[in-house]
Image (tube, rainbow, N blue to C red; front, top):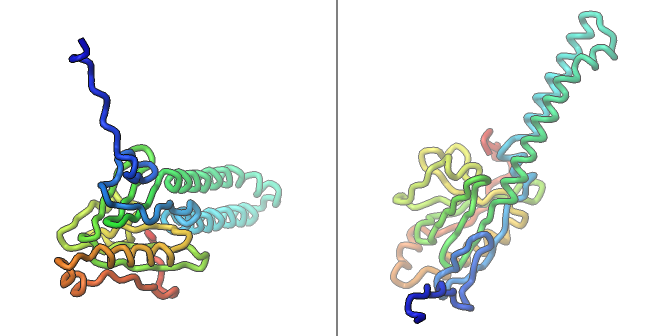
Amino acid sequence: MNANLPRPAAQPAASAETIRGIREPLPEGERVLWQGAPHWWALAVRALHIRKVAVYFAALLVWRVAALLADGQSPAAALASSTGLAVVAALGLGLLALIAWLCARTTIYAITTRRVMLRIGIALPIFVNLPFKGIEAAALRVFRDGSGDLPLQLQGGVRLAWLHLWPHVRPWRVAEPQPMLRGLRKPERVAAILKDAIAADASPAKTAQVLALPPRVVRLPHDVPTPAAA
């Protein structure tokens, strides 16, 4: 009588590891070495340029007040007339901060023994799976606040859409997008974990390829200008 009853869904093995925010367990034998998320303020400053926007609105406010004073208005009247612009500036900066916070809250970066994985997207999350064999190199940049970015240079046959990755992508590399772990709190530690994981994953069958194009983690100089879209 029980022949037609639906079978219970298969459960993953107890030893299978999972990444926070991703339901499917990792393949057998694969382990999570690190997982984290970007710092929201790093995204706000370097991806959404909240400081530059604040300077822009401040300059507009100063110009407006100065123009009103030059027309003969009193300081109190000039400030009152600039209230609307100040409200627009506050709303704009608040929106940028909210977007950065939501982006950081919904993003998950992970490094396993075989790949780098990104869960990105606020409303429609997407998953980016980057096996080590498709990563040619990595470049670490550490900023004065201690956070850092880790862009990944991919092999020539691996192509991803720049817009799908933004803001988790290296600026100005539209033709050859490079996924980037942004706003890492301990970038040197993450870079070391990635470098060791790629080296450990290099099997004898592909040692020559790894030696020819070794994954490298290097520190970019602090005085390199930050691109406008960084």
